[in-house]
Every structure is written in structure tokens, then in C-alpha cells.
Amino acid sequence: MLDMTAMRLCFCCGKETPFGLGEPALPLGWVCESCGHALQERDGIPLTAPALADTLTGFDPADFTFLATAELDHFWFAARRRLIIGLVDAYFPEATRFCEIGCGSGNVIGALAASRRWSRIVGTEIHTAGLSLARPRLPGQVELLQADARRMPLRHAFDLAGCFDVLEHIDRDEEAIAGIAAALVPGGGFIATVPQHPSLWSVSDDIAHHQRRYVRGELEAKLERAGFEVLFSTSYTVLLLPMMALARVRSRKAAPDQDPRELARREFNIQPRLNRILQGILDVEVKLTLRGMSWPIGGSRVVVARKRAETGSGKGTSVAPPARNTVAA
Image (cartoon, rainbow, N blue to C red; front, side):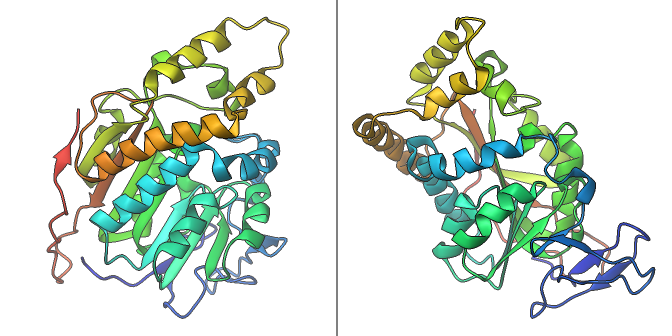
């Protein structure tokens, strides 16, 4: 992996300034030494895209409070956390600088923070409503930053990034992927999860402000255009796909006077015993996936990629081979 100096980017003048591992990525009170632009903050959170904070950009910030609790024990979110941690361990065991883009209320980044020792771990989110919920539930080592993924304020700052069911909320997702790539060192890793199959579109997608459900190969192609090499790609939520499809069909047949938000939240209203059964089913799927099982269809997709090493820098550009090199259908 090619080591490069981490940089902060001033969006007013474009000046990049270096910073080290002993410093916050973007400290409160930071002022650009070139143009004098002062970083804004809200409730102790640095703002790099203040005009978009807590607007209806990609997501309704009013939903964070509900999701912060609902995600903790829900079978789907619990299984996804285990899958993500397993893939991080399998493909990027030596990563020490991690950024989650769109960290919401902090459920995934909290689990990753507890999974190993990081020299830098940062969560970004466009909405401060999510970050305000995340702060008290995360260890102090996790830096939180309000940022637009399409205009990442950091360059070459991380050797691993994650974006978990976030890209589908962004109208120009390829700009976000390019921003994430810029924040990674050459050879750095990236893991993304997205919903797939447009045929599964339902009121849940509308309420979540999704821009798309991805078709087969779409995310992989976008990553490759941004300079990533795909290491692993597969569907997940496979074993429960029939149940998911049935729930989506039923929601389309709901009475027109029913509250769409309440319809969407029905997917979280699961009896504890049924939740444990469904969690057990997905646990089997996660274990098989982490052993290299390829799934042809599923409600979601996960892609593991590595930023290609840059050339012409005068430094070594070799990239360690991946733990696996399997691309599922």
C-alpha cells in the first residue's frame, strides 16, 4: 500500500494542508492558513457542508431517532454488522485508519471501533441530527464530521472506508464514490452495501429517500470507473428474499389513506421470537458468505474493492493480493 501524507482541503480556496496521526482530521476552530476561512461547528461537530445539514437531502433527519434504537437488535441490521466486520477482517486485516461515510447514529462504526485498535477512525454524515445521536454512544476515539460525500474534505487520510446503505440516497453517487476514492491512500480498501433489484421498490424506498435500487453489475462498474479494483461482490439477504418480496408486494396494495411512514416501519415491528429465528437464518448466510459462498440473488449487495495504486509518484506501488478474488453473480 502506497503511503501518502494526509491532507485537509479548504473548499473556499482549494488549499490542501497536511496533518499527522496525532491530530484530529478536522479540529474544531480550524482556520485555513491560505484564505482565512474558519470551519463552522454545531454542538461540537465540525461542519464542512453546513448548507445541507439536516435538510431533506438524501434522508429525512427526523427518522434518525427511530432508527437509532430500531437498528440495534433488528435481525437484518445485526446480520449486516457481522458481515461487514467479517469482510473487514478477511480483506483488510492490517487497516488502521478507517472512515465510515454516512455513519448515521453510529451503530456500524461503533461495532467496528470495538473490533480492533485503530490509529484513526472517523464517521461522516451529512446530517448533524444523526451525529448528535452517535456521539454519546461511541468511544471518544471516534471523530465525527458533518460532510457531503460528494465533496470529501480529506485527501489520502484513510486505508479503509465503508459506505453502508448510503450510496442509494445520493443523487450523484459516482461523485460520492470519487470523493471516497480521494480520501483513501492508493491501495486503500472500500466496502459498500446497497439495496438491489428495482423490482423490489416499495414505499420503504420512498420514505427512505432512495434514488435507486441497484441493478446487477451497476455498483461494480461505477467503482471501476472511479479507479477501484473489485475484489469480492455478492448478493446478501438471500435466504429471506421470498419473505422480503412478499412484504414489498403487500405494501403496494395498501389502502391509499394509510400513512406511508407507518407502512415502512412495519418491517421493524417483529415479535422477539420471530426476530431471533430470522437472525439465526441470516447468521447461517453470513457464515457461508464469509467462507466464500457466492449468492446469485438477494435483496442487497455487498462489494469489496481496493483503490488502484497510483503510478509515477517515485514510490513503490505494489498492492498486496486480496484474501480472496471471487466475484459472485
